[in-house]
Image 1 (cartoon, rainbow, N blue to C red):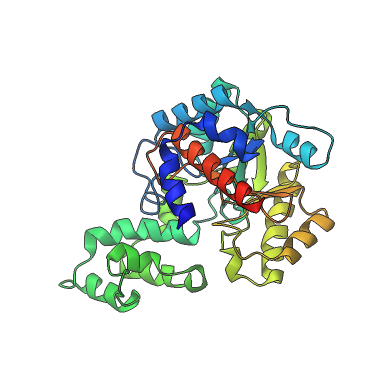
Image 2: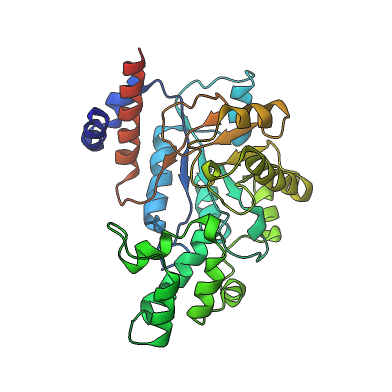
Length: 333
């Protein structure tokens, strides 16, 4: 309760007041999408930044923090570099095409480095992640859904039954988890929608050629698992398989270095054995979670700040995170 109240109040606390108390020397924001238009494979999942909002975010970070590269972060972890002031590094998950078309040009003009984390299953038109496919189908279903027509009746027979707090079409469709991903094809057939055609036409993800272009411009590339499962739902062997598969493909095809990994969804519930294995075997140099500015139990797993699901300016988002970090730091002492 105290943490929740503090987080709400922190939205209006000036960042300069709480940053020194937090003990934080590195801020790693993360995004998935930047666009001014409706994006069917994302828009039904969360609110993302438009171009003006994202440009404003970049200006804020560049004005208040020192930009560092992915290699700089790994050098700090290796003890060969220190951070003289509070720094930042921008990261982007899921490897959408807009990273090449929209994000990279904005970052280049600002002179800001970044890392793009990719799901290797979807490179070069390889398909859509489970929830991205559901988002596309939800667009289609919202146009067709009606108990009075055959498609609507068929959809009703496929979707999970309405439950308290999960009764809308959107809630019911998005309650279909990764473990039941085979239902996506059943839903697509019921809606008479060709997901493969959608991927060919919309080109949602980066191509190998675009990735090479990003690397040549000085940006970093990292792995985001093979096909975007929630790691807490996987066994240790499945977690390691997803990580190895994605990291090794990127190393082989693009020669990426350092070796960085960002957990899909979040790193909640991932046990110490996973981190011991990936770092002792030098499979990874660094990994990234999504829990804000509160330190993780493993020093090479860095938590990041979400810049989405809100229209709040970057200053307010970051001030809230610094206040939260200060609270947990003071409580631990």
